[in-house]
Amino acid sequence: MAEISINEQIKRRGYISEIKPYIPTIDLIITASNIGKLEVNQIVSKIHRMQIEDALRDTRQFFASFYKLHDVPSLRYLLNTRFLKFVKRQKVSPFALPVIPKTVTDEAFYGGLITELSKDTYPPISFIGIELSSLVTELTSCSYTHEITHAEVDSVNGAIGSYYNSEVLSVFIELQIAELLAKGEKILRTEDKRRIYEIETLARELKEYHQKRLLKSEDDALIDSKYVISDVRAYNLFSEYYYGSASTKEYIISRIQSIFDGNYTVEELLNEFMDIDRINDLNPTLSFSKKAIKYFNR
Ligand SMILES: [Zn+2]
Image (tube, rainbow, N blue to C red; front, side, top):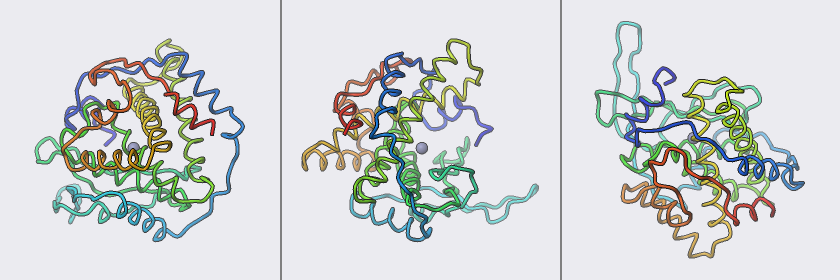
Protein backbone atom coordinates (compact mmCIF):
# COMPACT_ATOMS: atom_id res chain seq x y z
CA MET A 1 0.00 0.00 0.00
CA ALA A 2 3.07 2.20 0.20
CA GLU A 3 2.39 3.59 -3.25
CA ILE A 4 -0.83 5.33 -2.14
CA SER A 5 -0.20 8.69 -0.43
CA ILE A 6 -1.56 9.26 3.06
CA ASN A 7 -3.97 11.91 1.79
CA GLU A 8 -5.33 9.49 -0.81
CA GLN A 9 -5.68 6.80 1.88
CA ILE A 10 -7.55 9.28 4.09
CA LYS A 11 -9.95 10.03 1.24
CA ARG A 12 -10.61 6.36 0.42
CA ARG A 13 -11.06 5.42 4.06
CA GLY A 14 -13.58 8.24 4.48
CA TYR A 15 -11.76 10.18 7.22
CA ILE A 16 -11.86 13.93 7.52
CA SER A 17 -9.50 14.85 4.76
CA GLU A 18 -7.72 17.94 6.01
CA ILE A 19 -4.64 16.90 7.92
CA LYS A 20 -1.25 18.37 8.80
CA PRO A 21 1.73 16.91 10.66
CA TYR A 22 1.11 17.44 14.35
CA ILE A 23 3.24 19.91 16.35
CA PRO A 24 3.88 18.38 19.79
CA THR A 25 4.29 20.59 22.84
CA ILE A 26 7.58 20.63 24.77
CA ASP A 27 5.55 19.58 27.80
CA LEU A 28 4.43 16.35 26.09
CA ILE A 29 8.00 15.51 25.04
CA ILE A 30 9.35 16.13 28.56
CA THR A 31 6.54 14.19 30.25
CA ALA A 32 7.04 11.18 27.96
CA SER A 33 10.79 11.29 28.54
CA ASN A 34 10.32 11.46 32.34
CA ILE A 35 7.90 8.51 32.27
CA GLY A 36 10.43 6.50 30.26
CA LYS A 37 13.10 7.22 32.88
CA LEU A 38 11.00 5.97 35.81
CA GLU A 39 12.71 3.02 37.46
CA VAL A 40 9.57 0.88 37.16
CA ASN A 41 9.60 1.45 33.38
CA GLN A 42 13.24 0.37 33.05
CA ILE A 43 12.76 -3.24 34.13
CA VAL A 44 13.18 -5.69 31.24
CA SER A 45 11.15 -8.89 31.53
CA LYS A 46 12.03 -12.17 29.92
CA ILE A 47 9.65 -12.80 27.03
CA HIS A 48 9.25 -16.45 26.09
CA ARG A 49 8.94 -18.08 22.69
CA MET A 50 5.58 -19.58 21.79
CA GLN A 51 3.90 -21.74 19.19
CA ILE A 52 1.98 -19.65 16.65
CA GLU A 53 -1.22 -21.74 17.11
CA ASP A 54 -1.22 -21.00 20.84
CA ALA A 55 -0.65 -17.27 20.32
CA LEU A 56 -3.50 -17.04 17.80
CA ARG A 57 -5.77 -19.09 20.07
CA ASP A 58 -5.16 -16.68 22.98
CA THR A 59 -6.37 -13.82 20.78
CA ARG A 60 -9.47 -15.72 19.61
CA GLN A 61 -10.36 -16.63 23.18
CA PHE A 62 -9.85 -13.04 24.33
CA PHE A 63 -12.25 -11.69 21.68
CA ALA A 64 -14.77 -14.45 22.39
CA SER A 65 -15.02 -13.35 26.01
CA PHE A 66 -15.25 -9.56 25.40
CA TYR A 67 -16.50 -8.68 21.91
CA LYS A 68 -18.78 -9.96 19.20
CA LEU A 69 -17.00 -9.55 15.88
CA HIS A 70 -18.55 -9.11 12.46
CA ASP A 71 -17.26 -10.56 9.22
CA VAL A 72 -14.95 -8.36 7.17
CA PRO A 73 -14.44 -7.97 3.40
CA SER A 74 -11.60 -10.16 2.22
CA LEU A 75 -9.81 -10.49 -1.06
CA ARG A 76 -8.00 -13.59 -2.21
CA TYR A 77 -5.92 -13.87 -5.35
CA LEU A 78 -6.85 -17.04 -7.23
CA LEU A 79 -4.37 -16.08 -9.93
CA ASN A 80 -1.91 -13.23 -9.79
CA THR A 81 0.47 -12.81 -12.71
CA ARG A 82 1.59 -9.77 -14.62
CA PHE A 83 -1.11 -10.30 -17.22
CA LEU A 84 -3.89 -12.14 -15.46
CA LYS A 85 -5.49 -11.51 -12.12
CA PHE A 86 -8.44 -13.40 -10.70
CA VAL A 87 -9.63 -12.41 -7.29
CA LYS A 88 -12.28 -13.78 -5.00
CA ARG A 89 -14.05 -11.27 -2.79
CA GLN A 90 -16.14 -12.43 0.15
CA LYS A 91 -16.91 -11.58 3.75
CA VAL A 92 -15.09 -13.74 6.27
CA SER A 93 -14.42 -13.82 9.98
CA PRO A 94 -11.31 -11.68 10.66
CA PHE A 95 -9.76 -14.87 12.09
CA ALA A 96 -10.05 -16.46 8.65
CA LEU A 97 -7.65 -13.90 7.15
CA PRO A 98 -4.40 -15.71 6.34
CA VAL A 99 -1.58 -15.11 8.82
CA ILE A 100 1.70 -14.46 7.04
CA PRO A 101 4.94 -14.79 9.02
CA LYS A 102 7.47 -12.09 8.26
CA THR A 103 11.13 -11.99 9.17
CA VAL A 104 11.78 -8.69 10.90
CA THR A 105 15.00 -8.04 12.76
CA ASP A 106 14.57 -7.23 16.41
CA GLU A 107 10.85 -6.51 16.18
CA ALA A 108 8.94 -9.06 18.23
CA PHE A 109 5.94 -6.71 18.17
CA TYR A 110 5.69 -6.55 14.41
CA GLY A 111 2.21 -6.76 12.93
CA GLY A 112 0.65 -5.46 9.74
CA LEU A 113 -2.68 -5.71 7.99
CA ILE A 114 -2.38 -6.20 4.23
CA THR A 115 -5.15 -4.11 2.78
CA GLU A 116 -6.50 -3.17 -0.61
CA LEU A 117 -7.93 0.34 -0.76
CA SER A 118 -9.80 0.33 -4.01
CA LYS A 119 -11.17 3.29 -5.92
CA ASP A 120 -13.74 1.32 -7.85
CA THR A 121 -15.08 -1.53 -5.75
CA TYR A 122 -17.43 -1.30 -2.85
CA PRO A 123 -16.64 -1.54 -0.01
CA PRO A 124 -13.40 0.29 -0.88
CA ILE A 125 -11.47 -1.64 1.76
CA SER A 126 -10.65 -5.37 1.62
CA PHE A 127 -8.21 -7.36 3.68
CA ILE A 128 -5.74 -9.78 2.17
CA GLY A 129 -3.92 -11.06 5.24
CA ILE A 130 -2.26 -10.33 8.55
CA GLU A 131 1.52 -10.22 8.81
CA LEU A 132 3.10 -11.16 12.11
CA SER A 133 6.74 -11.42 13.15
CA SER A 134 8.11 -14.90 12.39
CA LEU A 135 9.65 -14.72 15.86
CA VAL A 136 6.61 -15.92 17.80
CA THR A 137 6.59 -14.92 21.47
CA GLU A 138 4.19 -14.06 24.27
CA LEU A 139 3.82 -10.67 22.51
CA THR A 140 2.46 -12.17 19.30
CA SER A 141 -1.13 -12.38 20.52
CA CYS A 142 -0.95 -8.65 21.36
CA SER A 143 0.08 -7.82 17.79
CA TYR A 144 -2.52 -10.19 16.35
CA THR A 145 -5.21 -8.60 18.54
CA HIS A 146 -4.11 -5.15 17.34
CA GLU A 147 -4.52 -6.13 13.67
CA ILE A 148 -7.84 -7.97 14.20
CA THR A 149 -9.15 -4.77 15.81
CA HIS A 150 -8.05 -2.77 12.75
CA ALA A 151 -9.92 -5.16 10.46
CA GLU A 152 -13.07 -4.82 12.59
CA VAL A 153 -13.12 -1.05 12.92
CA ASP A 154 -11.60 -0.13 9.55
CA SER A 155 -14.35 -2.03 7.74
CA VAL A 156 -17.10 0.04 9.38
CA ASN A 157 -17.80 3.21 7.44
CA GLY A 158 -17.57 6.32 9.63
CA ALA A 159 -16.45 4.51 12.80
CA ILE A 160 -13.33 6.69 12.92
CA GLY A 161 -13.65 10.39 12.10
CA SER A 162 -10.03 11.45 12.04
CA TYR A 163 -6.93 9.77 10.69
CA TYR A 164 -5.23 10.96 13.91
CA ASN A 165 -7.43 8.55 15.91
CA SER A 166 -7.12 5.53 13.66
CA GLU A 167 -4.81 3.63 16.08
CA VAL A 168 -6.72 4.38 19.31
CA LEU A 169 -8.88 1.25 19.48
CA SER A 170 -6.16 -1.11 18.25
CA VAL A 171 -3.75 0.17 20.92
CA PHE A 172 -6.45 0.14 23.63
CA ILE A 173 -7.53 -3.46 22.94
CA GLU A 174 -3.89 -4.53 22.66
CA LEU A 175 -3.38 -3.19 26.21
CA GLN A 176 -6.57 -4.90 27.32
CA ILE A 177 -5.31 -8.35 26.27
CA ALA A 178 -1.76 -7.60 27.49
CA GLU A 179 -3.09 -7.08 31.02
CA LEU A 180 -4.73 -10.53 30.94
CA LEU A 181 -1.92 -12.54 29.34
CA ALA A 182 0.53 -12.84 32.23
CA LYS A 183 0.55 -12.60 35.97
CA GLY A 184 2.25 -9.55 37.43
CA GLU A 185 1.51 -7.49 34.31
CA LYS A 186 4.74 -8.59 32.63
CA ILE A 187 3.29 -8.28 29.13
CA LEU A 188 1.41 -5.06 29.92
CA ARG A 189 4.59 -3.40 31.21
CA THR A 190 6.50 -4.54 28.13
CA GLU A 191 3.78 -2.94 26.00
CA ASP A 192 3.92 0.26 28.08
CA LYS A 193 7.66 0.53 27.70
CA ARG A 194 7.48 0.13 23.96
CA ARG A 195 4.65 2.66 23.52
CA ILE A 196 6.26 5.24 25.80
CA TYR A 197 9.45 4.95 23.79
CA GLU A 198 7.38 5.36 20.61
CA ILE A 199 5.60 8.47 21.91
CA GLU A 200 8.81 10.06 23.16
CA THR A 201 10.78 9.35 19.99
CA LEU A 202 8.09 10.32 17.49
CA ALA A 203 7.10 13.49 19.40
CA ARG A 204 10.74 14.60 19.53
CA GLU A 205 11.23 13.83 15.85
CA LEU A 206 8.06 15.73 14.89
CA LYS A 207 9.31 18.75 16.81
CA GLU A 208 12.64 18.55 14.95
CA TYR A 209 10.80 18.06 11.66
CA HIS A 210 8.88 21.31 12.20
CA GLN A 211 12.08 23.10 13.23
CA LYS A 212 13.60 21.83 9.96
CA ARG A 213 16.32 20.04 11.92
CA LEU A 214 15.15 16.61 10.78
CA LEU A 215 14.35 15.67 7.23
CA LYS A 216 11.45 13.34 6.60
CA SER A 217 8.65 13.22 4.08
CA GLU A 218 5.32 14.82 4.95
CA ASP A 219 3.71 11.36 4.68
CA ASP A 220 6.12 9.96 7.29
CA ALA A 221 5.38 12.95 9.52
CA LEU A 222 1.64 12.25 9.15
CA ILE A 223 2.14 8.59 10.10
CA ASP A 224 4.20 9.66 13.15
CA SER A 225 1.44 12.15 14.09
CA LYS A 226 -1.15 9.38 13.94
CA TYR A 227 0.86 7.19 16.33
CA VAL A 228 1.66 9.95 18.86
CA ILE A 229 -1.92 11.23 19.01
CA SER A 230 -3.55 7.78 19.03
CA ASP A 231 -1.09 6.39 21.64
CA VAL A 232 -1.64 9.23 24.11
CA ARG A 233 -5.43 9.09 23.71
CA ALA A 234 -5.41 5.27 23.99
CA TYR A 235 -3.51 5.54 27.30
CA ASN A 236 -5.83 8.24 28.61
CA LEU A 237 -8.73 5.90 27.85
CA PHE A 238 -6.95 2.77 29.11
CA SER A 239 -6.12 4.37 32.48
CA GLU A 240 -9.87 5.09 32.89
CA TYR A 241 -10.51 1.40 32.19
CA TYR A 242 -7.64 0.16 34.36
CA TYR A 243 -8.70 2.16 37.44
CA GLY A 244 -12.40 2.00 36.62
CA SER A 245 -15.06 0.12 38.58
CA ALA A 246 -16.53 -3.07 37.15
CA SER A 247 -19.38 -1.02 35.68
CA THR A 248 -16.99 1.50 34.06
CA LYS A 249 -15.04 -1.35 32.47
CA GLU A 250 -18.26 -2.91 31.23
CA TYR A 251 -19.41 0.45 29.89
CA ILE A 252 -16.21 1.06 27.89
CA ILE A 253 -16.38 -2.48 26.45
CA SER A 254 -20.03 -1.97 25.45
CA ARG A 255 -19.18 1.34 23.75
CA ILE A 256 -16.37 -0.30 21.79
CA GLN A 257 -18.84 -3.02 20.78
CA SER A 258 -21.16 -0.26 19.51
CA ILE A 259 -18.28 1.12 17.41
CA PHE A 260 -17.71 -2.36 15.89
CA ASP A 261 -21.46 -2.54 15.25
CA GLY A 262 -21.47 0.81 13.44
CA ASN A 263 -23.62 2.66 15.97
CA TYR A 264 -21.01 4.86 17.60
CA THR A 265 -17.67 6.50 16.79
CA VAL A 266 -14.19 6.52 18.29
CA GLU A 267 -14.42 10.30 18.72
CA GLU A 268 -17.71 10.02 20.62
CA LEU A 269 -16.12 7.51 22.98
CA LEU A 270 -13.03 9.67 23.50
CA ASN A 271 -15.18 12.72 24.15
CA GLU A 272 -16.94 10.93 27.01
CA PHE A 273 -13.70 10.53 28.90
CA MET A 274 -11.48 13.39 27.81
CA ASP A 275 -11.64 16.72 26.17
CA ILE A 276 -10.57 16.02 22.65
CA ASP A 277 -10.53 18.90 20.27
CA ARG A 278 -12.95 19.12 17.39
CA ILE A 279 -12.11 16.14 15.22
CA ASN A 280 -11.10 18.35 12.34
CA ASP A 281 -8.69 20.36 14.45
CA LEU A 282 -5.39 20.38 12.58
CA ASN A 283 -3.26 20.73 15.67
CA PRO A 284 -5.03 19.33 18.72
CA THR A 285 -3.71 19.96 22.20
CA LEU A 286 -2.49 16.66 23.52
CA SER A 287 -1.35 15.66 26.97
CA PHE A 288 -1.48 12.71 29.33
CA SER A 289 -4.36 12.76 31.81
CA LYS A 290 -3.67 12.69 35.57
CA LYS A 291 -4.87 9.08 35.63
CA ALA A 292 -2.51 8.11 32.81
CA ILE A 293 0.43 9.63 34.72
CA LYS A 294 -0.66 7.71 37.81
CA TYR A 295 -0.87 4.55 35.70
CA PHE A 296 2.71 4.91 34.41
CA ASN A 297 3.92 5.51 37.98
CA ARG A 298 2.17 2.41 39.36
ZN1 LIG B 1 -2.09 -0.21 14.04
